[in-house]
Length: 395
Image 1 (tube, one colour):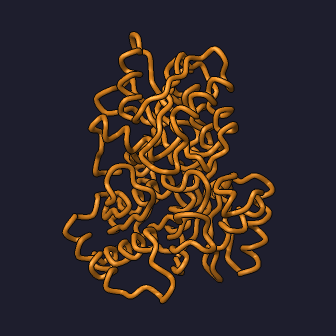
Image 2 (image 1 turned 60 degrees about the vertical axis):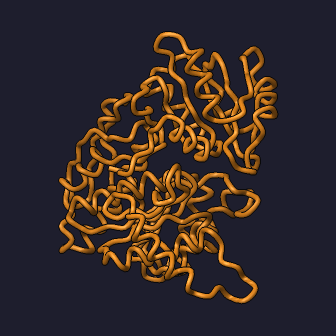
Image 3 (image 1 turned 30 degrees about the vertical axis):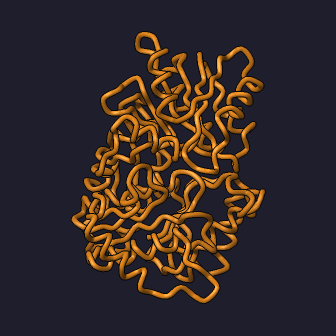
């Protein structure tokens, strides 16, 4: 199974994998980037691959010569490693997330049983194009002749491109919102959302979706549509409504709008583009009640800084500007200055590290004041390390 899209790929992939596992399938899940441990990219049956298995598979990958003049990239090696691991483990289903784009992504060497496109937005414009149409064209590059595809709800400009390109390669196209119909969202809170769906082949599916935020309901709908289509096409798989409920209620996708284990005042989310930032801002408002709080913010230099700050604007008492340990990050000083210009009157301070920014935020917070760490998955990964919150299981 092959997934592309701008936002929600990881959450949707985790939901699909969890449903397959509930049906008794042996699964492999390949995602990127990792937050704390490289093996997060390579999960077998929901757990990180064993270190010895990774080392053995890596030796196989390193033994394959790279084409002359084309050194192997980190992502290509990681994907080859995932394929080797999944083959050795004899997984029944491999759920593969594109790294960037789709058409030219290393993962696009596969011919999957099913393709999935999550919501498309403006990101990586310097590589994929600066319009939704151009980016949708790159994502649609994963469509293959005769391979069914499920697409999440899209902006009209992206949707029309996906439909046209699916038709061009004779890929049967399914709309997630038509196959899995949302009946009601009965509650949205910090513990998740109570949702009801009417799903083709499954009927009524009601559950508390463990992933927090209304935006995750859309990812759940896409995953339910995929599981429903698989159940229809693969009747021996054993997928049913009970598997779907298990997927919704027990999935976990670390680093995506969740509280820090052991420190309930601290929340984090790896949203790293304006669309993702708006989603997190809405989740903070709806799931948590929009409490005035502190923002620990780090943003990569290749992002639209003004658009990111516009999307994150909220009832922040203080902003602690940080940078992950990567050359791509905006410096904390430059970010604090940008915050001062965008949000006059809000205190903004720069810190030498993510850990320093978090500790300063915790020291300054009063009572049960909440703190949000956001702006980059790299920042969230360093936050998890600083708080000792890395976990091996995704569900």
